[in-house]
Length: 400
Image (cartoon, rainbow, N blue to C red; front, top):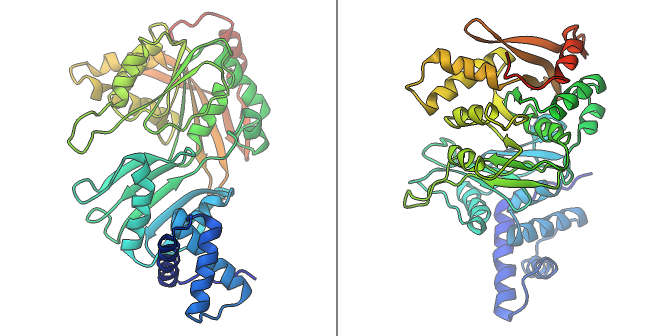
């Protein structure tokens, strides 16, 4: 039987007393020393606890002293892929694609902020009323987002997206049912033939994982430049340069947006450019790169369908230059994007590729041609897939 969750207030009192005693004695403050000192505090204060409850409390005290407090236990669990703090007494996690309540809690909102400060301080970042939102990346690659009052009405909200110790490969995606071997073969041929691919879907649908797995089909001799807001991609390739955007400093200076990195990447002699996610005006620069010698590039985009992805990409490109006529942007999208891989997270938590579409030029821009579709819970190739394979043997013609 699992020991009950320790009282956060008791954990904090014992932590303060234990760490204070170690510092007074000039002893090292490590995990074993903190646990031993906490045990002495419990004995001194006559706290009577059962074996399991005592061990759980000592673990919580050590986590509070040296780690991320109530979140540390969740960070150690390899099955947890997302941690979501809605308020101090309401924490959820994602396991196997399903969101469930977590056995974790904070004493109060101030306790949450204390842990947030512990997360951000080593990264040189901070969050306060003047800047109540922040994105950061932990040393292990996990992505952190924090929103505090007055924007977060119920108290500080923390979201941590974690990544496995080993990146998933394309074969792993097949084994997990994300796509089939037949569709994977088609996609790998498309990557090898230097076609531009856009991976689309909603939040948490697995776009970045699929993007990284497909990038594994890039020949080892090619130079790849990756560009992200928070560096998540871990490509299994030898010649990769990873770039990460930078927000403005507290003085409002020094910001380096994704768009600036895309432009700079063109000067770095890349064979391919991989943009982790297109969100703004950088779409125009990415499309330009895809049609001017950097074929075979990949990116992701939030969208609800392949058709919606093309429309959204057109709107984002217009954000890069409002003077461009819409028709010109639509034609640029049709010329740049060759294939759209659309996926989603199903109600049962599974992440599945729902559709793979080729993009063909048509009236008013691009038209999608399905190459694979999910039908009766199976992703199967359509009749157009064979013609697409034959097209891959020819040099890319800009989507004409």
